[in-house]
Image (tube, rainbow, N blue to C red; front, side, top):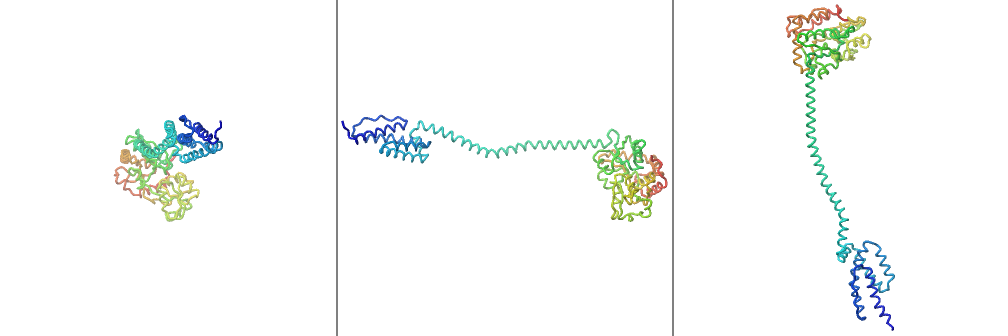
Length: 453
């Protein structure tokens, strides 16, 4: 039986197309209904339209995820008959069009397989979007929270620091108050004993006895007598004169007794008792220069020695064009003069006379006394008014009972000035003039001190 070849191809090609479409698409396709040969082309065309469209959309979605689809399309074109190639090319064109627009492909997939694709897409979107959203939310939270956290931290710190600062300030205030209270207790003769600072190189007022190693002198005996009359005791401690007032002010000592001249400058930091001695500054020179250096003017342009922190140093600095060389101790200044390191020395008159008499080998002499009018007083810390009152009361008592004059004669070889004799009033003592002191100095020059050890 013979068939027309063209008719045969008309029947076979549609069947093959249907079979290929079924293989390419996993979804079930309806079984073709047997139709008369004359209606096969139309039926096949309708079947292909119904089957190929969803297959093309599905394939488009598949192609978007993998580049193998293009290769598969090319293979199909090469292996199928011309008609099949044309049909497949049309499908591929539709597939490419769908693929070129990702959004359209996704929409087609959802429309084609809603039950399968939608949940998958949702899961994929969730997996992809969740981290992005989380990151965005985290970034937003950081941007929003950072200032808020910073502000909260500042507020918290402020709330914490304020009480801490207040507590620290309170503690510091308490410490300062406690220290001040402790100093006041210490300064004011705690335990009934006044701690006294003294430059113990200033004979005859205070010096260390080389035999007994004890501090002695006019000031020492006078303060012991004052303390005894007022019911307290004293303890003398050696201290450098240039720092002696600072240490008194900070509470290291109760009193300073060291032939201290009462000055307005010193009264800014310490209080003073009533004057207990009249003194002055003197010019000391080598005996060979005695005729040349008799006045302050004769010392202009010269090198002058003095003790640090004393009124002698202050006076030397007033001499025109003079170079002042300062020494820690008065004896050191006098030794420098004997060694010709300086041309003259400005020093307290009684101290100069005592040292010259005690060390004749220095070959020094007082060429001019009475350069100044000075009064010695006991320095007391300002907070210790009660102790100051006791010192003044004791001084009046020893002057009244003659003890003061006895001590004066012991150390200076003559009676004390009238203002310090029994019967003298306090006002007379404070108004005493220098001539008496100068007279005393002259007597000392003629009569060496016999009590020095």
